[in-house]
Image (cartoon, rainbow over all chains, first blue to last red; front, side, top):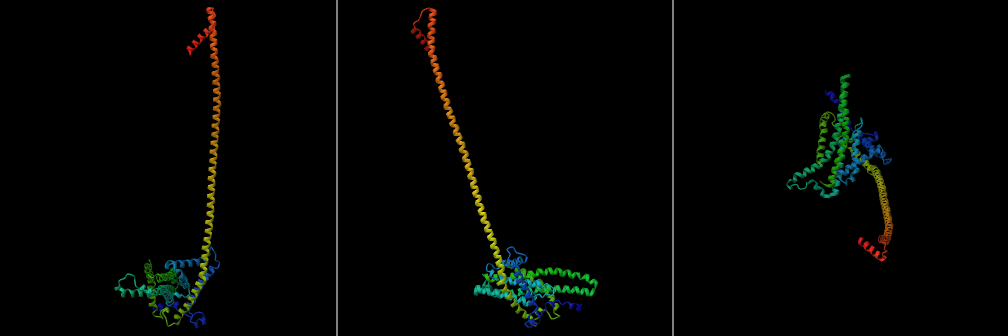
Length: 252
Length: 197
């Protein structure tokens, strides 16, 4: 049993390697970076080819591009308000970068860069730095009143202020861990069930093929679930960014 | 609302963490999670490349791709607004024409009514005039006839006296064989006639 357990290499898929041969090795260009380029290029190409005809009545790709645009635009205006239009390109970039990263990661042999805590943490830090910068720029030092709920008794200040500060700092932590944990867990489960199939076949032969149908069915269902998670996590990341931006613009 | 959403999202976060815990324990035997292997220089360097790629992605999106989409959307809303405006103008014109038509119909109706009323009144006046004329003519004829009758009656009455006088004279002649003086007879006849009325 212990020997079998060691054959499940659920985490090997997250192993970083250099991409693009010798050039990549010399500049430490990782396989995750290749997928980042692919994701960004897919979004840009879809927009470019979609909008090439500039039709009044859109075709499929143009409709896709316009729906994506409208979706994020509406989200920004709804969550942040009229000022949200200024942050629209950023939220759009964030949402589609993460969404396409999640989705292409679902293909076999494709690296999922959103499953790396370093990547998600970098994106979350980018968000929180932007949010804080926006808040400081709009409200100046008045921004620090954000850590003091209006009308709270002064006696509670030593308690409330640290709590508010911790809650503010925990935002990027929860943002990054949420995305990283969701993507990693999904891919670990894929790997575990797939390896389980091979183990069944290896141990039980022909009968194993029949039993292997179980994990196969689970993986098929899991794939559907993971597509949902890919959309959901990208949406959650973008929506939370919008909510934080709303707080930064309006304070409270 | 947002508070509730945040609570829901926090709960969403829990599920994969629960799955992840045994996976991490499992991996404890090997090299551990590659995500947490900071000895690998690629773990850090991929973030640098992420910054570069995301920056280029953001600039291309905000400068080129998204304005393109915005332009097409604007163009479409402008086209739709223009078409709506044109349709509204056409409708206004049509409404105006209908109003004009209604006005003309009403006017024609009123004119026709007036013409009919005029004709009727004229006909009535004509008929009244005819009746008056006829009446006058008839009255004149009646008056003439009455005059004639009166005249005839007068002559007849005048003749009656002569006849009566003559008859009385003749009767006196025959009965008394005396010729009665004419004035006496005449006076007597006159008295009798006067007595009869």
